[in-house]
Amino acid sequence: MVERNIGHLTLTVNQMVDQLSTAYISLVNSKVLLKSFPSVMLWGPPGVGKSQGIRQVAKRIADKTGKRVEITDVRLLLFNPVDLRGIPTANEDKTLAIWLKPQIFQMDDSEDVVNILFLDEISAAPQSVQAAAYQITLDRTVGEHKLPDNCIVIAAGNRVTDRSVAYTMPKALANRLCHIEIVGDNKSWHQWAVGAGINAIVLGFLDYNPSMLMQFDSVTDGLAFPTPRSWEMVSNILNYVSDDIGQVFPLISGCVGEAAAYELRTWSEVYSRIPKVEAIFEGKESGVPSRPEILFAISSYIVNYAYSHNSDSELKNAVSYASRLPVEFRNRIFADLLQIKGIHKSLSRLSVYDDWFLRSGRDWEDYGVL
Image 1 (cartoon, rainbow, N blue to C red):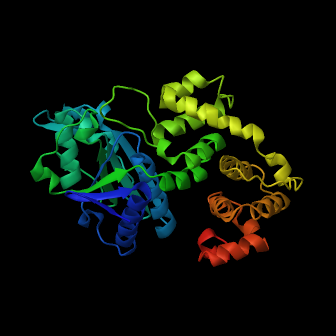
Image 2 (cartoon, one colour):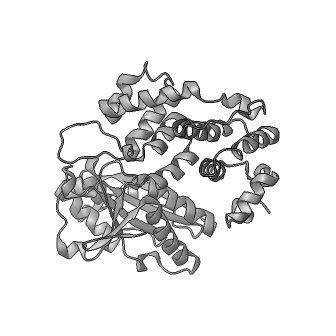
Image 3 (cartoon, rainbow, N blue to C red):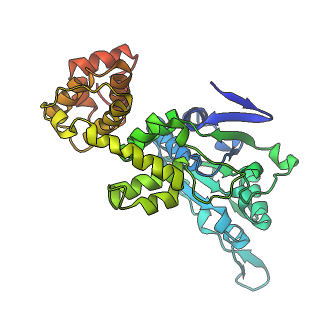
């Protein structure tokens, strides 16, 4: 369901990806100039997933058009006006000033490429930088520099109400952009997180406690708080530093705040009571838990383990075990397995999984299985 807000749409990250991907794919495949579509302005609180959403849009465009999609990600808060306008220098006979082209305009303009210029943190940039950035979004130029015809322009920023550094956009300017407000959504984040290999403990915790995904409060003064971005940081700590939450607790607390870190540590204790995932993939585990928190935990662990243990026999054992779980958790595991690249053919050969897949209205051809 698309929520409505005064003056603009409020969408989840998945809904935003669907809307923009459909629009851009239609333009590219119809060979309509991309400048025919208005530049987009994404609004939302810090860490809600705007940047991740743009990368998903790029991937979908590439998949559906066959073109290579290049993203130029510009963090405007770190820019000076000359970074967009260029540096002035004299022409050959020293009679006129010319502007050296900035790096962001060095784009491949060939027909087999689509460029996305992502102007992030536009509302927090110094006003002199904003002026140049807004000229890019509206006119696709800055001074004498022009974006190629194969370039999509998307800007993003925090709302003034978020108490981040943000300036109110002038109404005359706002009227020339397509505005979308992004809201936090556990379902959208879960789908992305499974495909991104987010740590199983983080994934299971947020599935069981979806309200903990986004705890941004513009009124409080805390610097560390839960957002999709900060949970990804926690996942990286657990994946690449240590999966001992007690050992890295200060680092986790520094990302999501002390209260959320304590809740995650308490939740992680459930993993000592779940069936051994190794035994499940070896076909040696038959016990099915009944407690909801253990079911959430084992569901996230099965999917996470399948990234590196996906031989035909291992997948057969895992799918067989998952099929005996309560239907909500069976469906969760079966759907999440689709996010793992390279295992779709193996899954399609399993009758239990294939039956579920076809009954869910999906098409194997969409997953590269003919």
